[in-house]
Image: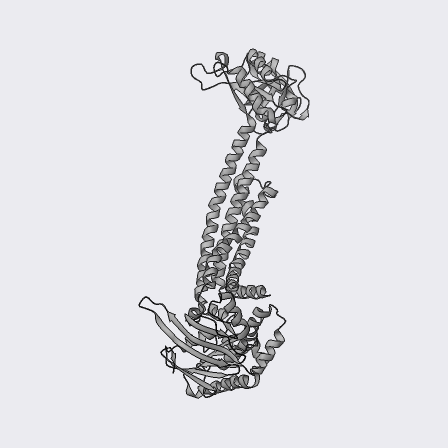
Length: 228
Length: 388
């Protein structure tokens, strides 16, 4: 089992992911090896169906490799139970989705509170949530609004605040600007850039947009499940 | 605290889909009201019957055998002779043996004509068997005691005279307490006279039945067997029945009827459970993506399960709570319609049905919610996230 050294936060070693289908196995990732260092800002690019999302899902502990080793924060996730994977996600990984994916029944503030309550079991966390929302340039008065009452940019800011509230080292972003106009997209990317530079968050972002990929330090291109 | 958050989410979801939640709650209410009302009715029925049957659980009734081949009766008749009574007395000793004669007669009370049952009992035996409401027990041989209902219906008071036509007339010395339906004698609708007087008036020397009062209930079987051995040695001369057994059989039968009607009510609750299952499955299907999101941000499977179970619990709690309250009203209405009384409604054995109904309603809701909850918690987070 490979060990991750101090600065490697995610390590892929010969990682393959196969999806069994009646017509035969689909190879989504084919023996991928990749080291991601603490504080990296990586853009994963590639055509549709190339395996970008599979990589992101594996890094997000939503799935486990069929073969190979994937270490996240020094722990090999292959063979981990669903409970262990969920805890790893909750405590160390923040998700940012293209569709924002806020919980429609909760207000902006409650959406941010949700992961924190999951982790701490305490509701004495409103101040922390407000601080994170403020850092995302969210107006105080908007925090009591439901997602349906917010613009796309505002929703994405709330989603980023939700991803950050448990202070994870890793942020996984799946086309974070895909549903935003270019101006709002740029603002969101600046936010992510600041988080990376000032708070040292490791950001792995899947994108099709080369202009967005420019914010990353490194671009990983993937085609047919292999890094090129 | 997580529990509170999941409960709050469940509550908001129930409120969001208020119409279908309301329909599911309505189903639970109907189910709970049905089973509780049926339970209360059944219990009231059993209580009403136990009350109307007199406390004759300590008696053995010996009557001439009927329905047998040939003659079918003691000493060739349908009556028991002094000799038979003596034999029964010996077999049943030391327990008290009370021979009873009975017949019916046209009676004239004042200007009213009626027909009633006349029991002939030895005056010493009357206090053992019957309780006095007013007046006194029989002392001489020409008095009579009137049954409570008979006295009420015919406006008989202590001192009234009852004319039995050719058989003579008697003066009422006492009114008996209402005894309820008995397996031995039913003096509520008749009069009791001294045995000597009865013999002369009805020209009947023998007895219709013998009641044996058993002091210790555990000896009932032994006494029964002893009488049976004594009397029915060669052929069946007498029938020996034990009132406790009859009472138990009747109460068991009514208990079973009550259980059966409650079970029918239970079916409506199961139907309500199916409707909860249905709306919960709809809820899971509509929220697949949401489940994917909460799983991806660190919600455990068991927490997802809990969230959906809370939804079922909320529906069950509201439905069972309202159902519990309404079922008291339902039980009241059913008791009034079927039994014309509600005196058996507010007794613990009836009210416990409300508790059963609520617990059953909650149980059904949770059972119905458990499959959708399990389904939600076992969704693959990646597939759930991709769901549109």
